[in-house]
Length: 524
Image (cartoon, rainbow, N blue to C red; front, side, top):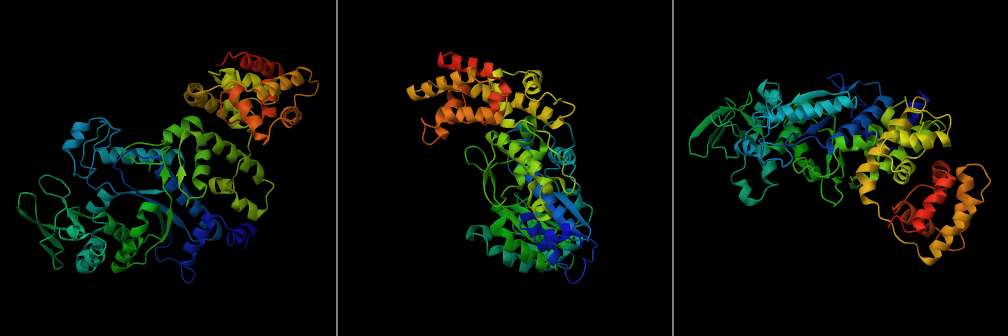
């Protein structure tokens, strides 16, 4: 056994803990299907959002860990529930009136409001696949519409008819009294209107696998449950899908957690062992509200990638998945800097340390080196004081600070410079708030100015940090109030990088000029 595999079998990182649970399923015999199957589900009722990325990224991390500790092949299925009826119109798409007219029709039967694809469901599926491909996820895509209509689901649907009463018993226990009266696990799709109907069944016939119901106008219909004529309600569908595909692992948001016993029972009734599951906490927007596809709130995938790398997004997704996290723009610089800190630490870690490092779960055994010679947060502050509208402005300062650095030798730094300019112009510049210095703050800042004017040392971040410390040590308790004052008075921000490093990057003369302008009130 390799040392890396041995470390993986005891690693306390959450993907390895999940991978070991999956491996335990097959400790006595390998899977009959020849591989272990991971699944992520997607409801294409709106445009894919960053939470969808998180689910696939995290599942891929568990798969990577599984491959490290096992030789059993594994696959990922991305299942789109696109036969679901469109229950409400997303507010962040065009052609609202047309969508209103198509409510309750399957998403793959609703015309595409963007007029690019045959249906709204296909449009959202293509967006999903596009971004999964952008991040090089390895997966098989399954459309529920195709799954139902092609007959691949027929065997389980027939079994659901045969076990209708038992499945209904599981479901009815979870419903309120008024819902029980009209509930059925089957949702027929009206042969004429094409709408998904939420109606009670008059008869469920196990002899010919049909259901009989009355539509809104009182007309009776009898339809086979096979071939896409009906779909399962979403809770039974979960368990039935696990049974039909032989799923071994699926993760989903906390809002599903109370339904897990229902999914498991239905899967067992249909003759299959439920998968291992992992429940993650939800993503919240800056106001603490759940991120939603239909409302389009929160940071989108495109938003994040405008201001930071995909690796920093994956790093964010790795962090504490069982803790609710606010997903807003302010966290992006922190994630970028922490990601590169972990990259720098990786090469000096032992096998156990490497497998506990988030970057292994992003890159596997091909972890790149970081060329981020300057923290992203410092680039943002430099962009702020320099009023950078383009990358070349920042590179002028960077080359003076690190003469050997070029966009070609430091590609990730060059990428970060572009992100910093975009982030500065969109978020920092419109929200800069300067304040006047108090008497003691003015005294300390003037002391710093004098010491910088008489400084004869190297343009070294640590030496300059000591100078900054010396000006605040006797005047501020706690000392962080001194640095907060520097950020708010000189940079118009509430926080920032190590100030000695900022001076080394921006320049001593330039910092003196910045101090003069701030104390003269030019920024107020």
